[in-house]
Amino acid sequence: MSPEPDAAAPGAAVPDRARADACPGALRLHTADDGALARVRLPGGLLTPAQALALAGAAEELGDGRLEITSRGNVQLRGLASDCGGELGGRLRAAGLLPSDTHERVRNIVASPGPATGLGDVRAWARSLDLALCASPWAAALSGKFLFALDDGSGDVAALDADVTLIAGPDGTALLRLGRAATVRPVPAGQAPCAALEAAREFLEAQQAAGVRAWHLREVPDLLPPGPLPMPVLPGTRPPLGALPGGGLHVGLRFGLATAGQWRILAEAAEGELRLTPWRGAVLPGVPAGRLARLAAAGFRTASGTAWDGASACTGLPGCAKSLADVRADAARALDGTPGGAGGLPVHWSGCERRCGHPAGRRVDVLATGQGYRVAVEGGPPGRSTAVEVTNEEMAAAVAAARRTTT
Image 1: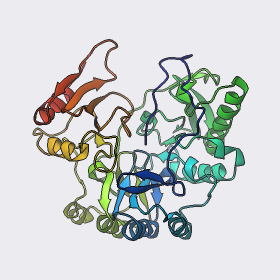
Image 2: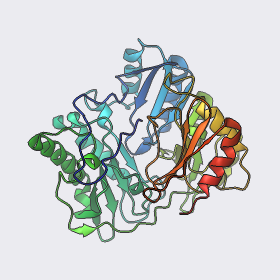
Image 3: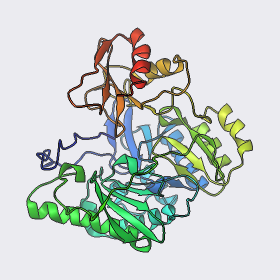
Image 4: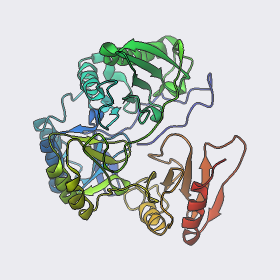
């Protein structure tokens, strides 16, 4: 994805959104240097093993044989022929992965992937919201970047600062948050998906009434009234890699990339469902810990506590002509060469100023310059500059030091 600049503060100028967003989809392919790219939306990151195998087949037979999990738990296929859209669409429809041609780009729903917390069934919310979204003609006008997040109370996906966030609460309640608001609205848990969809409709209608055009609620934070309650402090903990305390497995992929062969191993290991995560991994509910060894041997990350934790990168060269470096290769060398376990702050490598796919919140920003990299901590105290210019050889040490920043 290509995050857009945030509004600086409530009331800040709205970016120019006169044009439609260029976010790719499963039917509207994006032309890249390595061929066409398709993005298949998977609400809640939910896949059956059969659907996962269908995606592996499409990647192998129509593309470059690889699949990429995005930071919204969707799947991208690359290296596609420019004229394969019809065949790809047919395959996705047959697998139940394309329920609406008109709404396929707006089915952006992330959900907490871990074991049930007892506060709310976010998978049921995801399915209900997706059905209602596709059944609402007006919803096709949402940007392909507009995001719903369904949080089980752990705060893992609430931390993504989505356009509309639902947070499961006790006693059959849920909290509705709009953009990055400091307030929330209480809603009955049984009506939560409808409340989330209604908030999106209010956003579109308020834009029309105000004569503005925005893709995200954060761009126009004063457009809708605030909620009556303060946003609660949430743990914000993601499920750990490996065997999960409540049952099942969580595995990760380097930069979210898998070969079709790895993808088939993942599908074969699953029992009834896969849940792709916004952290470019997959949760396999109900799968015993004994299957971790095969997944590790296939190249999946099965344990936390390394420099790879919280690391991401844009496509870079050779897939993107705008990039100034093969950032994934450079990043992998830096991460593999970093001793000392877990990395601290999240880190994202970018090949150009667009910084495609960067995470929300405080992070280390590693930007290719053509002569090396610029390393900076983003989201720190205002006015404090941490940027340093380094060569490729100096980059690993500079990144490791920046990730240890605590102020």
